Amino acid sequence: MGQWMDQVTRGWLIYELTGSPAQLGLATAMRGLPLLFFGVLAGALADRSGRKMQLVVAQVTNVVLNVLLATLVLTGLVEPWHVYVTAFLAGTVQAFQQPARQTLVSDIVGNDRLMNALALNSAALNASRAIGPAVAGAVILAAGVSGSYYLQGAMYAVATIWTFQMVVPEAHLSAGDRAREPFFTSIREGFAYVAKEGSIRTQMLIALGPLTFAMSYTALMPVIARDVLGGDAGTQGTLLSFIGIGALVGALVVASMRRSHAYGLSVVLGAAAFSAGVFVFSWSHWMWLSCALGFFVGLFNVTYQTQNQTLLQLSAPRRIRGRVMSIYLLNRGTVPFGALLAGVLASHYGGPQAMHIMSLTALGILAVVVATRPEILRLAIPLSGHAEDARAAGRAAARDDAPARL
Image 1: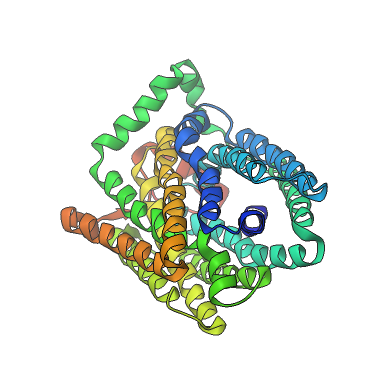
Image 2 (image 1 turned 60 degrees about the vertical axis):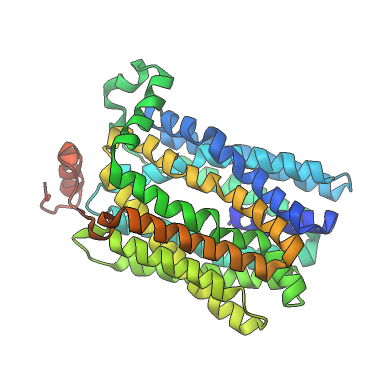
């Protein structure tokens, strides 16, 4: 919830300070750039050390950053550069948090239930995505931007307490092998593995187009809310909440699916539907229609991303999974470039036109990937797990008093 509240609050703050769509995109870019700079380092660290502790440290740092920015706003000392610096630092924290969070899911549940577990994880995140923006809009109206950031800091503090209570198996450490391996050798191994696996590269490219270009619509939400729909921070929060509700529904649908395989065709269709949904959303000038379209944008976004992440984690051995996921999450590091480009386009052509261009670009990239690598449409990976994970699957099955499918 704190992350989604930050998206609304930081965007509204910088737009109030500058009134510039371009600087709105720059603020989003500053928060996402660290994903490119530090994402792979974080993935290697997650494979070598305790993923739970890595998550705890990241969340404590977020508490400090939110309280600091809130105090600057409350005292009237805040300037645009404060927003940019804290955005970069928050993005750095997120870079170390994401691979640890994603790989913890597979550590706990094993491969057989990985897609359902990732979907439930997405459901939890998107439940907060549905609530967080609306809460942020209401808090901004009632207590100002500083009140929103103080509340976010409190949420990260509570999340840290809960994280400490998780019981996580540490079998992925494999008797200290990773500790003896040079750190940068570990990073090179991750890149080498991705370089030789064609299906993984294709899945990353499928994520690249929609996440870089179509996902940039989030950076333009203040423009849509204020300039197109004639609303305020509450309007922006409502739109993002409907997108979050759609994402939550999509996550629950995937979580309830009983499938024997993860399919590449489902990923491609979901990515195309998401990009097309953003294009249609950008045409709307009516609040009710924008909310309805936002629901479907959120739904298709989550269903395709969840299945894509499942394919990736099933394709990668557990010992290298953190590094593979960190390289995959570099795609999110390209979102700031899309947000910055969207802001520049919006400054020249307006918010809706910028969203048209960005969503069509995402669809074009997806079409090129499918045309050059059509085998992705036939990709189907069993959800029963890898041979090297058989012992872990057996332990998980024993805990559930159910026969293991090895």
